[in-house]
Length: 609
Image (cartoon, rainbow, N blue to C red; front, side, top):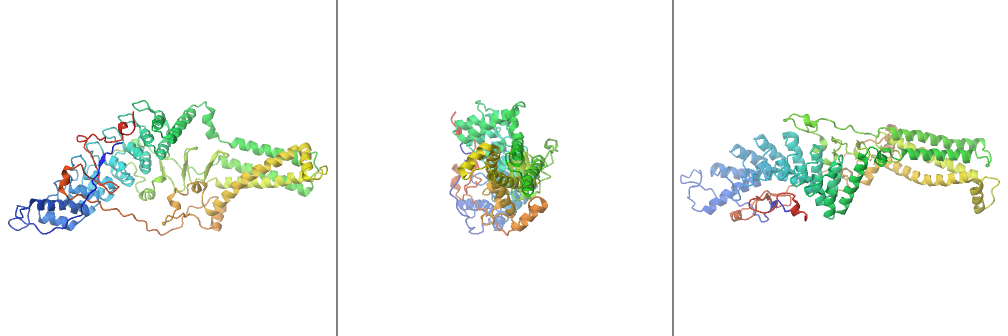
């Protein structure tokens, strides 16, 4: 994609005002040629825009109130002082310019207003002043870009959330090429913007003039994470074709993005299977392996009773040993009860947001309920669930199999056909502990019964041969019991360790991804670990670990670099414009009438046709 941005790389620092310029009467009102140096006048005039960009309110007042420079005129490049102030988040300068005649809706040669420029760097404070001063939230430039487009193009998620939630900006409006902010977010790969837009019910199936959906553009760019996120909650767009008749999977294959082509192709086939109500394959993920595991346990237990406890070719059990033998049956049967509870119980599903966004009034902000949610104010966009349309608790996760958000999500266990979460983790843990205890007891009983057979010859090999001939049922049970024991005991140890540390399986698997599992210094840190004793006691008493983090002092602050404007007026005939991008350069949308560069993600500049 040819960039829609041009940059200026050479900038000069703000020049000191070298004196007061007065008119012929000496009262400092305007410029009447007394100095006689127009270049010097132009330099002073340019200082108006420098002062606006640098936030030098005192100098700006001197230039405007004593020297009579206007705030309604453009600089040598065609931009207003209000735009420079907005770009650098100069709230006091912005307020001053508005109070002294600055037009909040004034447009430069590309049709952009100061509000557009505030979106480039996400200057929320300035945007508030501009909007309070009457700036149009729906203003579009020559390319049809609104502030929601600009904010998305630069990955300014907080700014996007602000203008949509407070000022009801349209998050789904198309530009002149029919591309919505979601198209741009998918192409640029800004995941937080994608999450927010999907949370706002942005139309993921919207096609631009080339017939491309956001999924098409994510596939073209080769952004695997964006493709995965766009598929959550809806796979309908997999079969949509563009004007060339290509699906997202085919476009990814054409661009040699093999992983994405594989993902989209497999997801499309699975979606087609699931869409067929008579397809057994489509029902398997929901059904799970719980019936199979239940049958395995029952068969294993039946074999134990028939071939070990009541076997006629083995010595009779003594009273004490018989109690131990039947204790194994009792523990395994009790484990089946907890297995049923874990499989059928609500693991901690979070209620989905079923509010009807389409019936909201035109002047009613879409996110009025969530406008001051701490997670969004803190910029924790990963807590947005694009499927359930909720703001998840920090330790919750959306299960792709159950298609629901689960509180304190541990993992989805196909063997119990359910998620393991906050409300059923105790049942799951008790189930596996009881079964492991039963395996130990029944294994010891089976081995003792085989070894104490009075008819068994001495020596391991003769004894094994005798058991395989006369006690094949007991020997088979013992081998399978040992096999099951190693797998189940490893799971028990893993779960017990995690409970003692108050961390979930999901958090262990994604420990490098979740920012809340790192301290202020960037080192790994579990804020929920209150010590082994307290973690275990809370789990035993409540049935789950508490989500109470340990407070940590942090001084995380990010400084925003100064954005400079060119001082040399000779640059006005160059191709250099503004506003500045996140890379420290000064970008601006190129006027399509003056260049052949494409304004947006067009096929011709992305891939051969």
